[in-house]
Each structure stands twice: as structure tokens, then as C-alpha cells.
Image (cartoon, rainbow, N blue to C red):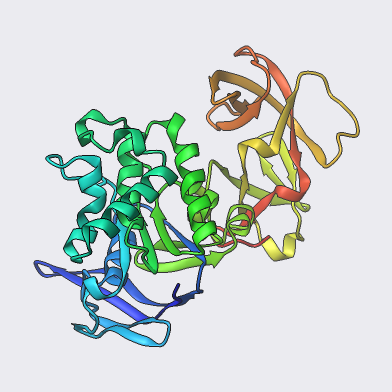
Length: 366
């Protein structure tokens, strides 16, 4: 496989009199055989970054290397896309509707002028690996969403690429199919030791596949690290929200507590480090609701009384919307194993070691 290195990579677009910084002076390296995930909102440079790696866009500035070979430089593509041995799976899968599954998979091999024998061998091998053998004679319109996605993946992998680029590859799948599709991509990436870059706005796509992840905002990497670190220690409130459900609450800091209405949340740092005001971040699965006050719940602390406003069932758990009893304009979301009737008052318990504290400007303090 290959390591990918970018130095000061920049791509600007002009839109009338405005300059859009799609990728803004990015420097980093994806090691050989590593899956790198890029998480970010729409319009912040994820797809442009992939297209630069593939050679489909010309950098405004900066350099791209595959191992030690320069492939792109300021205002020029040094190595053409077809010579980079890169495979790309697009969000819409881009299957040819007038071709069978077999011919869709075989297309890049035919373009490379391989022998019919070698083409047939490779197509049938990858079809068996991705469980497509029984639909090789079918057309895309005759396939399920999962089969279409696997056909696009098979077409990308059949030429044994050095680099696999995935652009929102699961967004067109039903929720029930996404987990199996992610697991399939992860297995193939691991088995082939394939250098992979996946971009998505869905943290589940990134965290289930990537060894290392980066959060891109306004064309820059705002945080790079292990997926678990980005989830548990987001560098800003924006990253906290992008990386999963989170309750972000403005609080007054009084005697080392973050005070939100009648709730008192203990801070993991001193008042001097935080100041008079802060933003507290707690994820829904880091809290518990108890109708009766309990003592000694390991790792949890009682922060006050709340009132249930809404309880709904989703993906195996109940999502409960609550408010402090003294201020129903404030709403938090808690995950519960059991339904709780609206109007019920309960005690809110929070995991002490998962309380995130941000400064007023959104920067992580602790």
C-alpha cells in the first residue's frame, strides 16, 4: 500500500468577488495501511479534500505525496488520477444503469485493457467476497440499496488499488443496513491493509471504521486524534456536537459548581481555571434518571431534581427530554432503559468523570 502526506495543502474557489477556502493550509500524514476518517459538516471541505488526493482537483497551494513521490503541487497535477491507483466510492455510487453488475465491476479492468480471462477471474473473486455472485447478471435498478453499495465497492476494489477513498458511502442506505455496511468496509480495509480515507458528516461512519480521525471545519483540521478521544475530549463545543449527541448548557460558576437553574454540577477543575461562566457538556448516555434518591451509585453524582417533558423510544432505548424543576425553558436529553411518564419528577445523576467544561468561547477547559 502507500502512505499519503500533504503539506500546506490549500484549495480556494472564487465565487464572484468572494474567495471560498475549501481546504486551508492542511498538513498531516496518513500512514501506510491506516484508515483515516474525516468528520465535518456539509460545505466545509471534506469532498474537496478527497478530490485533491484523487487528483481530480488542482491545489491552489501545497503538496501531496504518495510515499515519497510528489503527485500534486501548486497549480498542477504531477501524477494523473489514472496513474495514482486510487479507487473512489461516491455518495451516489455512480453505477452505470445500462450495465449489469458484472460489467459495472469489470469496467475499470476493461479500461486498463486486461485480458478477458483475468477480468473474469477478478470480477468473480470480488463478487464472491462481497456476496454478489447471485446478482452478477442483474442491473442496478434490480438491486437493493445494500447490493448497489457493495457493487460500487466491488468496482473500486477489483483493480487492487493502493488507496481507497470513500465519500459519504453509507448515506443512501437505510439505517438497518448501515451497521453491516460499515462492518464490511472495516473488514476489507483490515484484511487488505488498505490505506483508506473516509469522509462523512455522520460520526458513526467515522468512529466505526477509522483508526485515526480528524474534524474539519472551514477547511482546517480543528482536532485530530483517536476516535475515542475526539468523542470523550472534544476540543470545542462545535466538535462535541459534531461527534455525537450532547447537552451543552450555559452555567454560572459558583464555588466549583456549574449552576444551571436548580442543578449543581461539580466541576472537574477549580473556579479560578473556569471563570464566572462556562459551558457544560454532558452526553445523554452519561446521565441517569431515578424516581427515588439513591446513595452510592458508583461514578455518578446527584445534581438535582428535574421534570420529564417527553419520553420517546428510539433504537432500543428511551430518549427522555427533561428540564430543571425551576426552569422549564432549559431542555436536556437523557437516555433511559425504561419509559418515564411526562410530568414525572426525578433525580438527575451525572457521571463525574465525563463532565466536559468549555470556556464561553467554546474551547475545552477540562
